[in-house]
Image 1 (cartoon, helix red, strand yellow):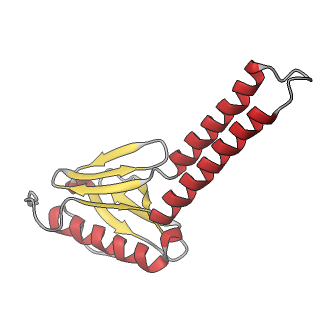
Image 2 (cartoon, rainbow, N blue to C red; image 1 turned 180 degrees about the vertical axis):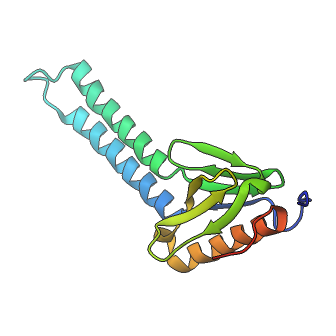
Amino acid sequence: MSTPTPGADLPRTWYAKRSRLITAVVGAVILVGLCVLALMLPEKGGWGFGSRAGVAFTGVLGLGAMLMLGRPKVVAAAGGVTVVNLVRTTHLEWAQIVRVYLRPGDPWVYIDMSDGDTLPVMGIQTSNGKAQAISAARELRALAEKYGTAPDER
């Protein structure tokens, strides 16, 4: 195994640009919509300050949930690969990566690890374009083969 030296190919970051944009826009619409609703609710019928604040806070939670859906990315650097999925971030040394693959019909890339586990890499997904996902998977696979112990591709 060779230790990566800083070069033109590292660091490299992949993320689903389209998904990130859509989730941010939808989250903003949720927030603005619920804040406008909170302001327009009549005081009659029990819609006091606390109730209105609760509606607006629900908008904040909606925005947070949508931003979390847009969070996935993968960063390849000299020290290995960091995979950021919805709520979990996993750092892998290059030697831990056995195989990187994207099978037909898979929504995103997967990494087989040396401990036998499989890690979904939601930052490279087909919803951003099938050709882009295939290209990104090939790039990540090439980096894993260059810096790690990944044997062959399937």
